[in-house]
Amino acid sequence: MVILNLGKKQLHGKEEVVRLGKYELGRILGEGNFGKVKFARNTDSKQPYAIKIIDKNKIIDLNITNQIKREICALKLLRHPNVVKLYEVLASKTKIYMVLEYVTGEELFDKIASKGKLTEGEGRKLFQQLIDGVSHCHSKGVFHRDLKLENVLVDVKGNLKITDFGLSALPQQFRADGLLHTTCGSPNYVAPEILANRGYNGASSDVWACGVILYVILAGYLPFDDRNLAVLYQKVLKGDFQMPKWLSPGAQNIIKRILDPNPQTRITMAGIKEDLWFKEGYNQADPEDEEEDVYVDDQAFSAHELSHEEEKRSLESPIRMNAFQLIGMSSCLDLSGFFENEDVSERKIRFTANLSAKDLMANIENSAAEMEFRVQKKNGKMKVTQENKEHKTLGNLSVTIEVFEISSSLYVVELRKCHGDASIYRQLCKKLLNDLSVPQGKH
Image (cartoon, rainbow, N blue to C red; front, top):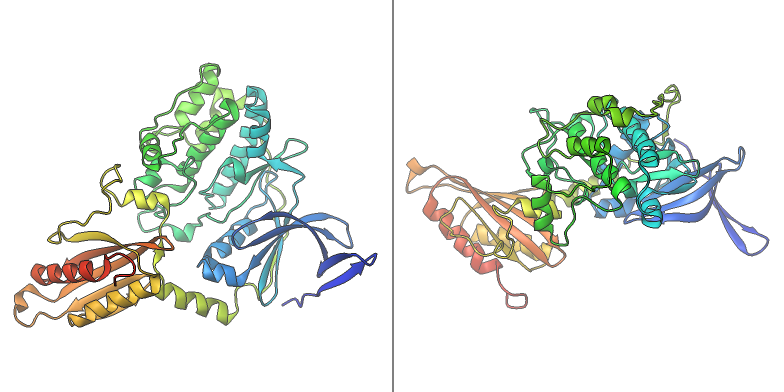
């Protein structure tokens, strides 16, 4: 454990300078939901760094401690000139400090926004670096899952750096089928197989996102875009985009092969590196020396209160649902009638409730208890069971109840009958519909 000398001193009687061990913290470079990124300088070597300052309380509130752990684990594995480097992780009782490579440049997004589309020569050079960086990640078992222009930096010399591994996946996240199953990513860059919600290959989905980035670099706009998420979802699933006519046949060909909606026939990283358009002027970057170990302070995640508090909240809190999971729950793309009450004779029904999260969970539990159901809670889910004393041949009724947070004032309640008496299940559904799906203020 390193005891941090987190102090302040007055400079010329006016400017306040904050010290973090051997680092002197400066201006804010960026700000997110759970912390800030500040410019820093090593007081001994004068080397510049970017320090990501993460508030422990905020990551507990957002239930993303494991996400931060994965980002650190991923960056510890990666040493490549096209991936932002992690040097060390420091910690105090309330903060985690990730000391990162400082890139003097801009986001690729800003570069395209200010200059517009790039020439094929300039765009190809950036794309070659992107593929080098991403393929290095894959060789280490790291799958980014949120590749987009905003997560790619370009320094003043034109060197590309991949950043923000907060949604990355590591080998231990693969299920027995060898696939990933978490629906994540950014709407315009997400691969169709992720939306299909049947499992996906992390490497293939990253290739798709690289294809979207290449398209934007050369066209100046997104291949899949619509203000209506359901329409966007449909375009992505079909691979429905317009090819810019001014692109060379070689550029058009590689884009078509990458933005293939079928992951089985989509070009692979190895295939991209063999493509004639891609290989023009290609000089593959070598990985950097991997002997240097990344120091991680044992205070960062070992605090009992951090893990205990998050575990407690995860047992009680509804699951947050992103837009793609929301769309994926629907059997069709027309969301206008998505939340209408379904026939309670169905094995699965959904309805909305606008109670607070705390009241919603408590009321579900109380309603089930009134019908003499036994209640078990975990990770925003409830399992309710009731012994069938009259018709033992039907077995005990078992129902899973899951709550999804759409916004701070809107939740979806989903009931799923696992087995048991359908008539009792219908009674439970009707009771919950009556007790919960009511206008706020009338309950």
